[in-house]
Image (tube, rainbow, N blue to C red):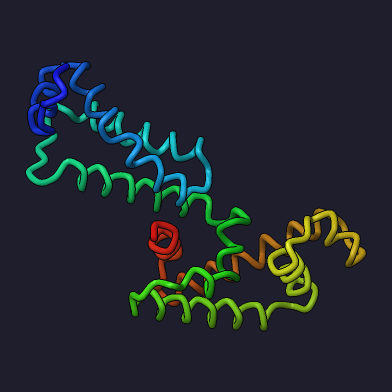
Length: 196
């Protein structure tokens, strides 16, 4: 495959089932998409999976794909949506929820709208945590603020690991529900913050 093929030429060759054109396109964009995706997912394996899905979709839809603008922008948009979906599916993972406590560090963004969302989320989370039953609040704070494991929390509070898990599960459910009612999309916000 010649190195001087344009993106449009590669897309046209792909429509004709040219696998070498697809390989050239893949090699041309993979690394540029991989690095920011790792930053967002915080996992090389998950970033690889996202990119594999995006490129597989491009290949599978090669016959009907009609990209008028920049192929780079198109691929970045595809990756963005896949990454937001990934965050949404994994929002309860500790590293995303810990970001809620580090929003001040992340909020270097000059975008006023992002600053407003961050403030609103912080107020919402603080309000929900303040209204939690005392034991649930203690478990949640030990988990998220002090970064203790379930076992460490159970030992400190004299309760079972299973009780700790239930308290955290219910606490997260309350927080997600309140944030959702406030009309804020956490996955989109995390994507914006992590992609900076």
